[in-house]
Length: 138
Image (tube, rainbow, N blue to C red; front, side, top):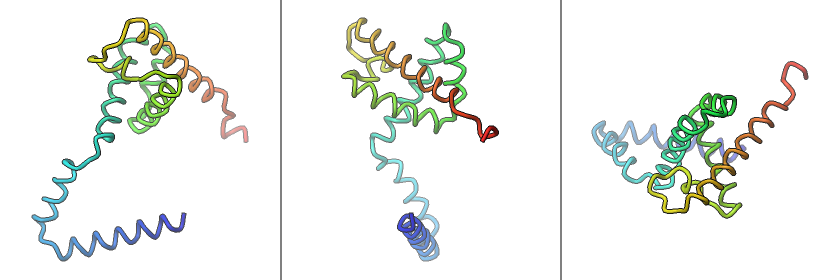
């Protein structure tokens, strides 16, 4: 934990030092170029989370409690859940993209099995959350 704080403080110091020594237009150029070097997995996570949200909106209308909970998650919370669902699908020999990606070339049966897996996983997450003791009780 201390090492992380030291790294953050050193990074902040270097950034402040560079911002004082570097002309403003060079800083803006550097910030603009960051978008070009973002790892593709960062873009994938965001798009996968937005695909999951769209899928929840369109598909889970017959499961209003689950749909309401999933749609109430913050963008960060939805990204975390999407990551967890994606890992779980992979562990089960499936791919979340089979369900969410419009260009996924899989059989309807495999899409259905992936849908069931995702719904079951999300239901378990919701039940676990509902069964946690409240902070007020402690």
